Image (cartoon, rainbow, N blue to C red; front, side):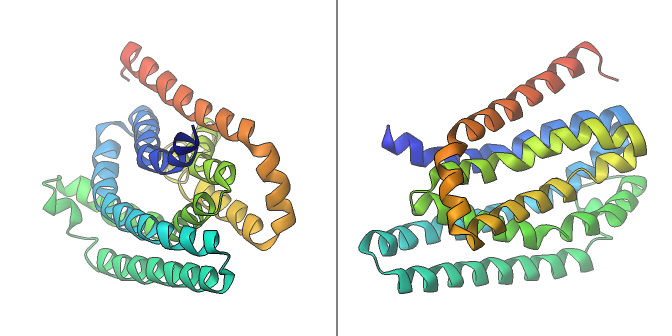
Length: 239
């Protein structure tokens, strides 16, 4: 039981991008057609590499943070956390620079059409701009489940796909395809704001820790249910 309680956060980290991908594909198909999906496919392929690198930082720092926390060495806990955040930001910054400079050829590398490649060139910077927020959240998730605040880590893990789904129900109605493209930055900023408040206000974090287990379960259920509804609707009405 205790093992599954702690393991739920890293498992959720693995599935969360896939949930976001499938929900995004559904709305992109509805508002932009196959071309929009091709553009997002190229973007997601390159961003997946960064997600794995950041997950590596989080997974690598988790046992060190847990050891310091268990030993009561809070000085080492802070130092390890700081090093983890710095490593995540350095990796993210290097990837952002490299991908921004190569943005005009990414679609070509994946065999996309000239039109899809132009879409990748135009849309990729929007996704790159939010990566520093993602880096911070990913390390914070590892910090939470390494220091026995597993419910808070669940909230952060599932907040992005849930908020993305909610935003996708609203923005495309107002902005059509542009609303779909804007559905990633907002939820990512929301997750960053949540983790920032958790880290800066221990009392709030403590209160939420006691109350957020049912919230986290509901968020996870909503994410998977939203994904299921999108797939079901796509099967009934592909367009």
